[in-house]
Image (cartoon, rainbow, N blue to C red):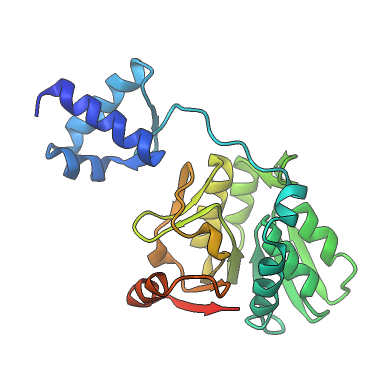
Length: 252
């Protein structure tokens, strides 16, 4: 493969996937990781991609976050059922983390007033739990993302370093069997990566419309998820593949 052809292939892969790691590019292009790093430096200088830690991301505009009030009413019935099922996975005195998804807010709304510690980056979740006296609520702080009513950014990420939780409950924009969990916004993706790394058990709350979708930024491989709660529209082929990956799936 000529150098120019390799450049075009790299740009195409980054554009298609949103982000990709040096190690994967090295395998796909059959060259060393050092060569790929030099290629990425040159392509960044040319404005064709942007370097990131361990790889590269596309320079095409990120998809804007959908405003919270719109997400709140999208697939609302499925989210309510998923949240009610998720609450069954929570035991008294546990330490849990709820992300800023609307499904996590439904979880907060359905939580009984039992002794719990809940860490969250969501204003809506924190407000919902404020009236439940036995639940201790800890907010991450950070930069306020007005469209999602959540805290993001370096301060939010650093605050998570101080904690360890039994379970994290999170959602996402896309669930792809090969490419994993993804988000439309890089700041949200980075925060969710941290959340997954600080929990004993990772529980993904995702309605069936999110499967087969790959959003802009990868969050994690599916193998990092322990349990998925979804709705009954999830097709049999997907359920079978998730089972092969060792992921427990509940549909409601």
